[in-house]
Image (tube, rainbow, N blue to C red; front, side, top):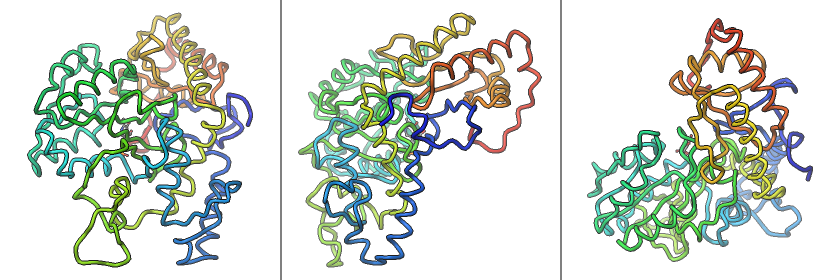
Length: 413
Ligand SMILES: Cc1ncc(COP(=O)(O)O)c(C=O)c1O
């Protein structure tokens, strides 16, 4: 494994001199992915139906473990997701999306039996926030949306005060997708202890946190930890995951025959699978996406999550130094404890700045035309950060960026 940066372990669609700073949208492709996808087409051709029972173990070829399409969600959960989260084997499973997992949770009678309130900060991602609102029409659950502070951060005092005997669930983002703010472990533990004292459950949405830093789900005290592999983990779409605390009993009503105790008996009445994590499966799982799911995770685990976090902190620190020198106000947190892999800067006419940088093969994104967002990740170097800020400086000092025509080809930047 090469030391960080891991540029040679990923393939970029752009010229070699380009700088990709949008790990928060879709991670670069690990070099092993084409081979893994070729394995999928070959396994399908070679084994047909029998691939559900056994295919060569491309994920851990050295292990001697048997693996088939049927067991991939739990196998990859044990081999790759559990180490990402500091979790024990038997607690993690691949999921199609965070949305699906949250909906399964909200459909579980055991949740409503704990209380009525679902506490969510207004900065939560729609997969969580919208789901909480939608389910209030289906179950005796009421969403309680906790407004942010003036600085657009989770209002920690208000959140803690809102937790009480009627709290069924508290759902927080480990890293805020619009703020880049990372909630520190001590605060998350306090939330966990308070929710549990009142008999509720604690869910953490780990998108932008898992795969950018070591996570220890036991220490955080969460009951469920969800996330996806699309972004920093470079696993592309269709690959999300859930960790369920050992001993947690949930019986999602939103389950499918893949989560049934005896799927091939095709009984008229459903029976929940004894392995609780399998109950979070619906209909037939998408197999192709599981071939490319964990190649990015493999790279990060091989180099070590401590090293990934150290590299990220060094690059974001460098970005902050440059931003300070240019007097660009910082929207995301400054302190290393609260910093994630993202840096958000207030830049007037941010969309034009992003377009200007793109003309120079530097890829960032903007929010509401006021904020430039960037996330230097494992494929980036200190020189990438220097070049990015040289261009920002040049754009601002010459005013050249204001002349750029913003040419969007679609909603995703
Ligand atoms: C914090 C957070 N949660 C969840 C998601 C995506 O969820 P889903 O898998 O439902 O698309 C994102 C995507 O940007 C996100 O930033």
